[in-house]
Image (cartoon, rainbow, N blue to C red; front, side, top):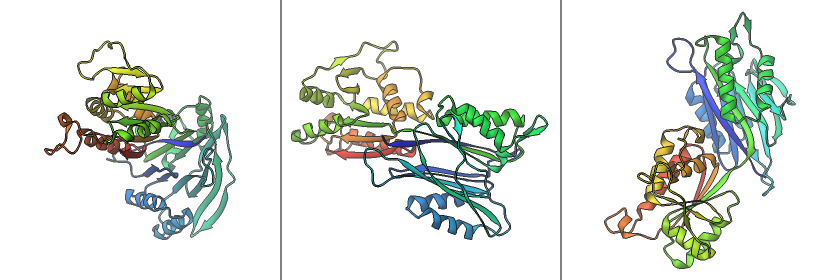
Length: 375
């Protein structure tokens, strides 16, 4: 079982400030997840650290470069979390975390509803307290990183300390909430305590660990008919969500599977905007092609996550929901040209490819891991 770190973050600006001055950066690749949080730092600083980690620079080297670049006698607490898959396993791929904290509030980590105290090693460097450790993640773990401003919240004639936050997180994660739910609860807890706008910038990164969600999307017939079976085989090899976008692609799949395509009943809001949805055994969703793909992009453009989508069951909304819920998405794009749907005057580039490229770009910007094969 491969694991995925789901992350959500938010920064709140202090009173009379136009923007939060904390630096936050998270990114996910097929090999690693990283989160960076620095109190009162400039965005470029965190971006440079994120770029170095993306380029596979060892965390110890990133640490040394950051310490060397920090202005002397300037207090800039920061924390970096890097989770990597073991390169020696295929089907069961544990996540090992390397944690680096410099004058920053300690990480909050819960497992099975219990707070876990990590085996931290401490050292002092140039007047700064450095804490480092390594640990393995499991399904159901929750992690939170908070800025100094968050941990120093005051209200109701009291100050909220690290133990208070830890107790709150322990209670919240008993429900096996996801990252967005944990983030929302932590922000609301702060706002209740602060009783108004914060006197300092505050930032929170919430993370939850769960099995990775995968999907494969087939759209468009291959140029060569001899590639049809191979394309179908790649779709059916998907152990997660299987999607077909395109009537011709669905017809090919039904013929090769010796199965029947059945149109679903007309939805309450009709088919005026989005073409009908069909059913095919072994495939989770079968929709029309270019129009539905374009409408799915429109649905996703206006929401942050799948839970924000309208409560509709048309093909575009269902496609958007499946794509937003997936972490890794593999696209199978057929390049056979329908003259009625060509993107160029020479009728050599299918409009489908343009729409698919735009869709993949949107999903990549959302942090999805995208791969594609053309046939």
